[in-house]
Amino acid sequence: MLFRNAESNHLVDVADIVTLANPYELTVVGRYLWGEEVQDPEVFDKAQLRFLSGEPLPLCWHDSKYREREVRRIKCGTQINDGDYYQGA
Image 1 (cartoon, rainbow, N blue to C red):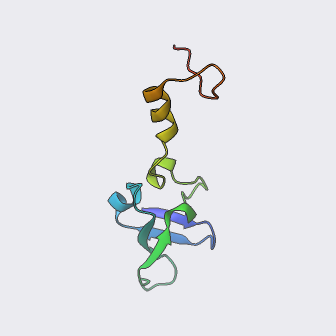
Image 2 (cartoon, one colour):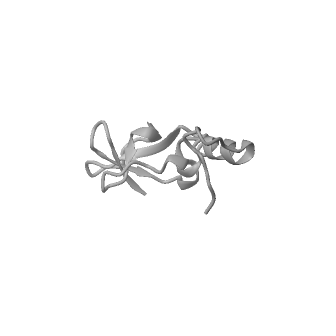
């Protein structure tokens, strides 16, 4: 799968999609795409990878605690003065 490195703006080919989508892995192995020869594999920080459109990776792919606040709210309940006050739908 192709991504763009946010720092260098070069294309990166990531073959291991399972590691890419695992929020407990902060890095992924990929290869830069340039020249005619296959480049050596390098380790990339997932926070620095972007889709080709420029969008960042989904938060659930690199932050293992992305739903912690929501789970805490549902489990413990909320108060009216809380920023996450839920009145029901």
